Image 1 (cartoon, rainbow, N blue to C red):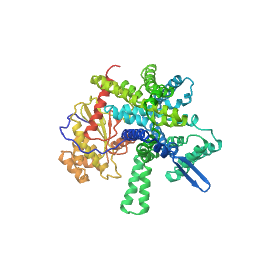
Image 2: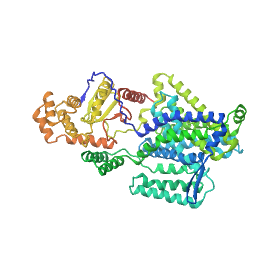
Image 3: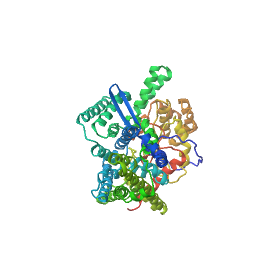
Image 4: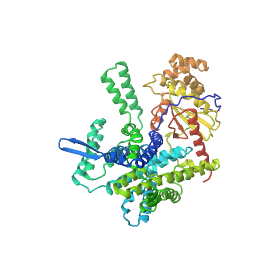
Length: 630
């Protein structure tokens, strides 16, 4: 079933349609919003130093909501820090849940490393902070030195290390998922006011109602909204920082890939609407489409851009304001609060991340180790020294007056220094010889998760290219899918690489492509006569002509036994062979076409020539690292 002669077709597709995993979307959103947040911080510093009175007057403005005799009123900074920031922590909770359901942490054995690195990565900075403060008046603010601003760290990592592989960013995110969760627990327990029992009990009741609605399968957001607002209000009244509500709600939102059956049902509802465009059918189609996505995915798509591009920058604008003069800075950098935060982040974070990762790898003899190389681990540790959002939030809860100003200096200085150190780490790594650089950034191949459920079998799969190639590209495709047709020139150009083998697996989407199943069986009937790839190329080259008469004409063109070919199609002789590929697609979480796997790992993102070439290049580097003795 193999064809070792690579195609000589040269060309470059201009098509860059994005099919992105939510994790990659998360990373790209944070990378884009980092610049907005940095601009907001700069604006706050300029504003407060040019006109501190107007700056404080704006954020101290009282805003209240009154219903009869009941009044809820806070200043704008409180509404932002305790209100809108709840949505930010909702997104954090959603991403944490997604990592457990679909990300690297879906393999629970992999939870040990990020759990320990995240926990120790908070304990060591806290100990450094307490050591510097030695029981002084600022010792109670230790929480301001513990938590990484994962969103800002990811964004700045994208800006500082443009050649950093995406796996390094994913490693950073998985490690500091734990960091974010613990930080919210600390806020709830340590930095909340005197706890009122009755509102806290009501908060538990409201949360239980939310869980009950989810268990009953209620999916309309308007049903959940009043209980979410009530939960937030009860926590506010209880004295517990109400941003915890966002995290709790986010952690309950399950994440899963859209099932093929759900997509087929949604497609059927849309067809009904297309045939009879009534308001009722439009509503049914809309609900069907929404239900094909997980609650986690729908909530992330709704709130993530708002939190990244509006709420967090507003938080920076409202809280980063700091009057700067030489005398104050000289005093601040002698202050235990400033030095404790600065040293905790810049020394404690990389020490913890690198130390925990190295220790676990040694103790387990490599069974538990980071999914990236040691340079990427070190870079993740140094960039973790950015603790802006949660750190400032805790600082505003723990301090006021001069102490708060000193804490802000520590947070901002740590962010700047951590960025410089991270840039240096990746600058030095980039200067290494090519093989050493690949190993330093990517780690070892055998430590990667496998997404492709059924491995490639040259005796059963359709393989193009050398069997001993270091990289295997698997495509789940549909002969009638226009996107598969547009991807075909890209695949042909990739096959000029003599160290790449390509595998086609069937995924006929019969609900939208009525001739796809017949075309798939036609290719298998041709394969039985030794002409799979010739038929494959004809079918993708004539996607609008896939009726039975067209398929028979292609069989004649290829010199196949026409009667045998016709009988195979009539009796559906190879339907089972196509179904086997469909089962493999379902088990691998594939529901659309084309979907690519590179060395058994799913490829997310665009599949133009440049993007796929880069993915293959990284996979080859990993394979070569794995081939060398450790």
